[in-house]
Image (cartoon, rainbow, N blue to C red):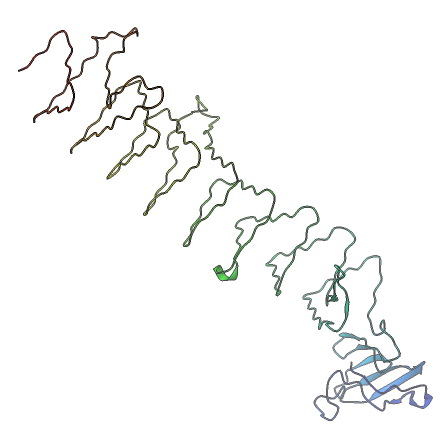
Length: 360
């Protein structure tokens, strides 16, 4: 109900039409938008408050209480209107709607709330460095609070802040989805510890993938456990593997040592194999050692004796054992077989030492 002229305390208005009809935003100059189509009767006036009724031509009517600024109005549809307003003499706390009760229970078919805001009211900011606007809508609960919806719950705002003083839990009965900028935004997670417990994890990336890790990075593959199987724990379970598939190259740069241990075989398949060693290469084999090539095998050795080296030879090949060991010196043969020519060239002395030398 909009403002009407205050009737004052003129007793002559009692039982007569008010000088100005309450309009509730409707234009009194239009017959269709008038507050009523009949008469407005002021029943009584006291301390500037008027109570009255109004009637329409169809026989309906209503009741109102007003001081010209605030009003209580029951219309012809049995709807209750409460409007508050303050004047210049009311002060900063005037014109409000205050409700105090031990318990409030409301049951309605639908509930709509529209808040216009109060951007002109500001208080000192929490950091003391400026001012911040008072919230247009504020709910303060001294205890637990619950919002339950049998359907969807939607929150929309320019910015949304959820501040949990102790613990924040997000629980979904099915799927949890985070979308930022319709897929083109950014998600930042800043925390001291980040832990993910899941049965499956998949990253479907169209850009780059970077990890800036700490000094220690560990990857542990769990041992499969089946409580129904007779042998419930298996070290090498079927299907357990680590795969890296790339359509490009792979670079590994280490400032320390690299160690690889396996209980199975190590197989490297490459178009070309290049192995470079600055300080030397050592290989220890406790089983057979097989080199097979379909092309030329070339070995170039430049004899550069190292410190504490016992030999000046550029290339040495021993089978069986060296002198002073318990190996049988004649128990390991060397066989050179070729369908082509075997050529031995040396710029120094060539020695063949054996119990028998056969030249065919």
